[in-house]
Length: 301
Length: 257
Image (cartoon, rainbow over all chains, first blue to last red; front, side, top):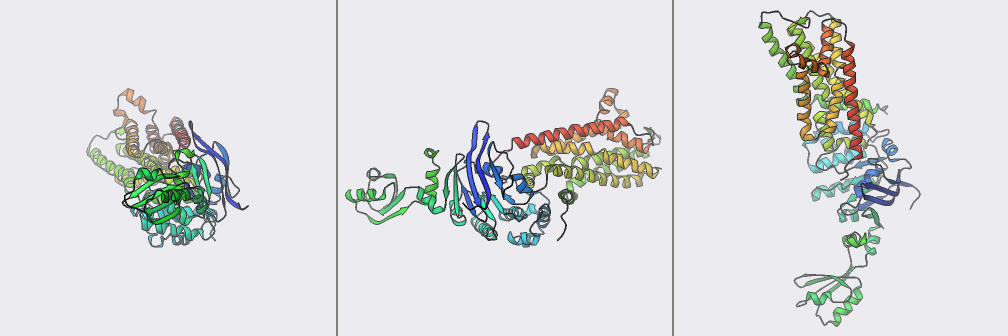
């Protein structure tokens, strides 16, 4: 890990009553790095983020952002965040877009100029509009604009594209990537594995309050030994396929058969020995999604 | 490079612009007391008996009551349904991610409420004053306006308490209901001498009565009653402490989605 970590999380813990939502998380993000935080609901993503931002105090461990406490980092404008707002918009009703951004920017010691914020967030044409009369994608751009007003060194996005349609989601990530290209580190939580794979250089998988995996998308994929053996065949019996060596799961769609195997070589040898007539044999590594599911399955607690 | 405005000043300017654009706020704090005053004023002046109320005419007595009403409605708007809605929408949490300290947030809300109260009292004095033409010296006017303005402080604190404690669906009725009960029992809509004695005793504890009493002392040029001020300060401390306590409790139980 480079010495210039913008975010340094060590042994972070948070208990809610008897349950420990975050149970010892270590996470470092280098200046300018983009990191995805993956994990199923309840893995501790939002709780971790709330502690990084100083919204919630940890029951153990510590967080530093640019060498400062979360509160100091927020006051200094080192960190900007776009959080999940649930049913609400996260914005004050009865405000114009430009006015809102001008106000939030004025709170920071060295903010981006309002026109630059509007341009980065793709809001230039909406500056005069009321925030209560905008679409979901437009609202998310405003929340993004508020997060970058400070000209932060670390941008935190908690499931920023939840509820957006595909074009809005795509254009949102283009906006984020363009801003990150200016040197701002980004840590984002998401459920969409494709977003993690496309946008982040590094993926951290959280499971039950622990870091279950931390690495590049390829590294994460390789942590899972499962390979996929696919072929076409007619008249096969699912039970017989399940009995082949190293097979974990059988999927059959008409004559297209897909086997999840922990040892693809043994499975293919067994398949040949069984005398099954097959065509179009293909062996591939499992996708990020499979790796994710394997890492966050119940046995992996 | 512009010099940076203090965050509190930025916040105050932002809040004032928003509140002045809200039609509901303007109706409740300005339109209602003005119309109510003019209607009642017309009724009473047709009455030939020149009754005296607390040492002054009905027109002046009732003008003070309506100034108090406007100040109370305006100040409680510092919080109330608006604050509850801002909490529910996630805006207050987003503000906690900016350098605006929470004391400046609370102070900004209180100052917005009291600034709106001052505007409402000034507007009402102007309209009621030109209808009733009370022969009041400028010092009495000033004292009455100052009394209603500063006396609105406990209601700003009450508004923040309700906004922090109530959910969006109940905040509006809770705020309107609470202030209305306090207004009626405090003798703002129906003058206190009409009440039975036991009810008058209750009324004299309430901040609404104390605020109006302070205003009436100003227009009748009686010395200001220290008990009025003591009661108003006590209510401010009570509501303010309860609001601070509610805020801390809310932070500890912060639900993380």
